Image 1: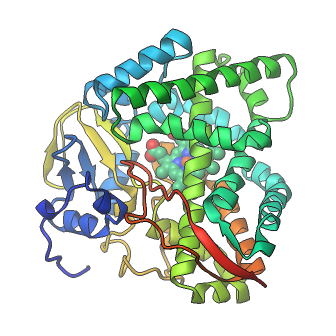
Image 2: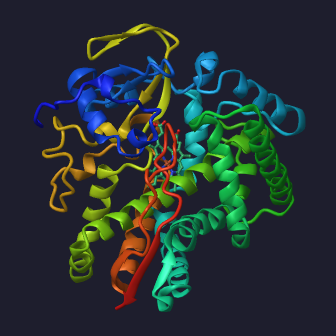
Length: 419
Ligand code: HEM
């Protein structure tokens, strides 16, 4: 058990960008005083204790992923409806697939993706993943400095997922801007102009992808888009255009922001605790543990949404039917009831792998194996090839950009020497 905090819940607000960027004292205060916390600013219920977050994630019959059940209570309200109307009029409105469905409907989509993201496929991808990482490091290693996010943390997982999907790697910056636009509507408050501009970017993505679907329908290749457009048989109806668009939405957003953020946070940790750079260089077999503990310590997905199908009591708080709930993975991962000295980064922690950074239950991250492979590759290559890595410029204050779900660091200027 950690010590009792001297703070009060009312000392904090998640709408304060400083708190959002460094939420750990607030999480601890909530765990001790109000483990299920109704955010006064949004009305959403945030769940912060490890066991309770697991309960939310593993009971889809009570905590549904279908957020359309309470569309009127979503972050954007009317703005979300206008966004949807723009997509429907000139593209494809959002429908509920995979992450936004519950079992048994969820299983149809999940089976399809599980067939593609298998252990053997990730293993097969290994050499290509290594090459992409080395090529990117070749691009800046002799310069002695780089902007780490733009030159490595974003393009590395971005190129891997683009090539998985069968898209051209030269368009990586465009894909990233599509991913950012696709995530924006669910994660930060927007005004009408910003919403309209964001919808235009998503429309551009949809029309590009529709062209690729048509192409792969006629000329199948060995990529994921081909697998998706030709998926049918067994118990599966072919996916229609709305479903294909929605699945791509999830793969592009899942493939980019999360892994980019995980790599950036792992690097930030190496910069803040520089002795780890030499330790991991000397003992690369510790990198797997380092990756798990860094996912626990600063989880790239801080929290995601559910909607209650009925009234439910959790940690002494009554959550009415039809409420938005945020399962706060990042708070659970710092729960003193589960992790001893939770705020300490501990390379030797025995149960680091019990973190919930990839979720739990039916929606457990479909890309977790791939993401772990990318993270281990990234940290291995960076610590083997570079040393004395440090910040060339201080990070902004607050460090993170505002997001209710993610933990984005936009840029990180580094300097280093080659080993
Ligand atoms: C470090 C990197 C990553 C983190 C931290 C992460 C985190 C998560 C989390 C927390 C969930 C659970 C969602 C829920 O509870 O509803 C999830 C689901 C998902 N992730 Fe990841 N993810 C990562 C990488 C990836 C990658 C590389 C891909 C794609 C290639 C991906 C695709 C998905 C998809 C499609 C789902 C939805 C699965 C479902 O609903 O059945 N993720 N991820």
